Image 1 (cartoon, helix red, strand yellow):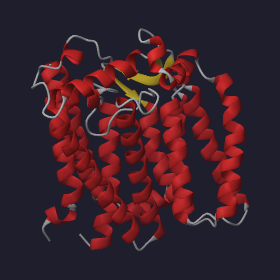
Image 2 (image 1 turned 60 degrees about the horizontal axis):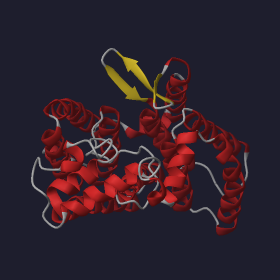
Image 3 (image 1 turned 180 degrees about the vertical axis):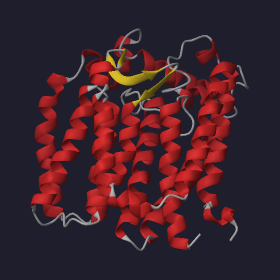
Image 4 (image 1 turned 45 degrees about the horizontal axis):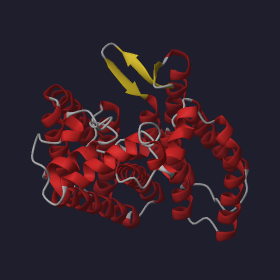
Length: 353
């Protein structure tokens, strides 16, 4: 059988376009960053291919050990991690540093999918209690790093997954109420810079040189791009360093300034095709684990994309969430390809590829 038939073209082609445009906008600002990203991209592609041919039943069988290893890895930055902007999210190995919460996304997807495929979430049990406790521990660990953006993504992924699984409306309402009661006191645990980002989002015009600076400069970059962009390599916001983190958190704004609305629309259409394909694979999967795994990978990437683009447009607080397949960074890019590989594997299983 032709091995190419094992890969869903509607998963692959949109990502090819997005990563190519991502490399282009990185190269326009820094050739060295683009070269580094190309190396991460190669690793991501290799892992995507390898994961596409993994035995998913083994992942299902060993989901708990995999998740526990990911938890241990996430605890390490609290003790030996590199502190960047007040957060300990990174572990440095030689010249390469990786964000441990990205690793947790993989373990989180596998663990949740494996357990929810077996558990009756509408019937209290000891196994369900154990599952909830472990899941909450993982969220607390990421929150303490602190990584508010990833904590939110993981929590919303959990919420979406239990709804997809069929949590009753009564229990869902109770769950949301409990979360709201728990979230309010968390404000006191937020770092000052996290509080400032939220306040700055609510009124960015109030402090344009402080809390509202990032959002304001991002909006300027997007708006100045117009319909067709200012031209390749002519983005003043990124090239003159007005736009912070133009290669990571605000790569979409940097891209919008140089390439314009038309190409931004192309990127968003590619993401839409990718996510609809992932969702279709999740809905068509015959086995519960495959269905939940594909859906969990879909929702993780979708939420990350939605939050990042909204953040670049001034519709969401600055959270440090990168844009999948486009933002600079090995941890995020490689994890995104791994999640994509898991979904493609589910597709391969269902089609017999």
